[in-house]
Length: 220
Ligand SMILES: C[S@@+](CC[C@H](N)C(=O)[O-])C[C@H]1O[C@@H](n2cnc3c(N)ncnc32)[C@H](O)[C@@H]1O
Image 1 (cartoon, rainbow, N blue to C red):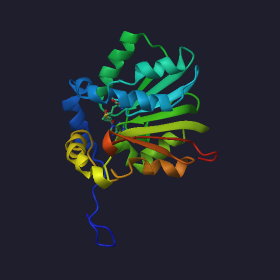
Image 2 (cartoon, rainbow, N blue to C red; image 1 turned 180 degrees about the vertical axis):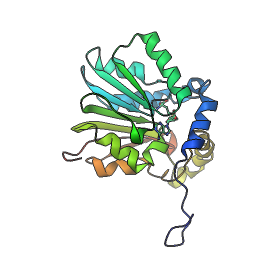
Image 3 (spheres, helix red, strand yellow; image 1 turned 90 degrees about the vertical axis):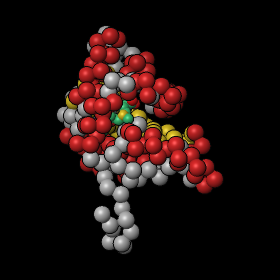
């Protein structure tokens, strides 16, 4: 595909490929993510959850974030996990049953069309969900279910720049393993900006990983 200017553009996310990718990975996913757990902790800390909050976990996968989210919101809060892969969400269901968390609702659906129950949310997490962030319709749909001022956190892989560009030799295989589109990997959070106030972006692992946080703009 090429743009008007004749510059090559990268294709966007591919649902069929993503479903196949996570059908294959579901059984070993938790093990594969073990190295990245400190980033999950950092991302969830940025959500600044309060007891009683409603939080959306978009592309919740096997539910690896659920325990930390539970700790933040307590029994009076609620978590809505949205995930399109039946194999991934099945593991999240097992996790919920094991934790006996009665305040978690799991929705098996593409984020862009998910029926999101309950009141508008106080916070949303997009953790390692690049394919979702690259779907403007998914981001817009999720954002419509947030309160003005809600906290938004996105985290994941990104291209490193400057003198750390060599890090991309590690980012590339990791990204190819977990997303179906490399488009926008320079600033994966960019699609959120239309809905939020200023985004604060922290980078880690020599620029190969980011945590971006912001608040939904008053009329977002
Ligand atoms: C790398 S995993 C991240 C899972 C989880 N957030 C975590 O932190 O472990 C990306 C997840 O996004 C899901 N996904 C990709 N595109 C999606 C979409 N359009 N709607 C809902 N889920 C999607 C995949 O099925 C996969 O489970």
